[in-house]
Length: 208
Image (cartoon, rainbow, N blue to C red; front, side, top):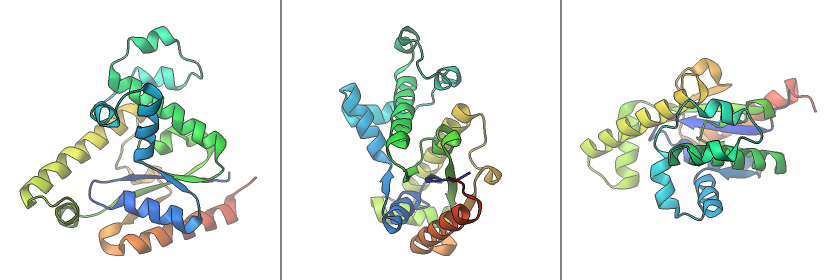
């Protein structure tokens, strides 16, 4: 099966967002990350900053049944917590993008699960804690202790969010086509490897 979409899951501070954008630029395709949140906010008529807090909360497993349905009952949706509504709307927007664009990069948001049936090349970016803390200090100008606390909370939130919504394990490397240690390889080389692996995979195994 041809995998035309690249999805990236990443540990906090691993540079996954930067690497995803670099890979997209090299391929000449779009990269979606925070843009998904902004699209959701625009569609809902709510400020992105407000939705961001809801996005970080963990949706309920009840979303499994809703996500499997093309037209879930509106009355059921109205009774969902805001965090569930946000995830459901983001999932729809992601699927709409997949219908309209042949190829793109999606960072986070359980992309490899949401787009599993549409053909995605899934990537996991990780790094050691020391390197991730250092990156957080440099990028966000925070103390080492604060950077470490932010990292631990962000990773726990992402892990729980992913596990609850997919029924899979976020850090289980067996579910990804490619796993890269950004602390060892660096951002630029990671992006180059993603591009090369993506192209080689489709050249060897892809079918139109």
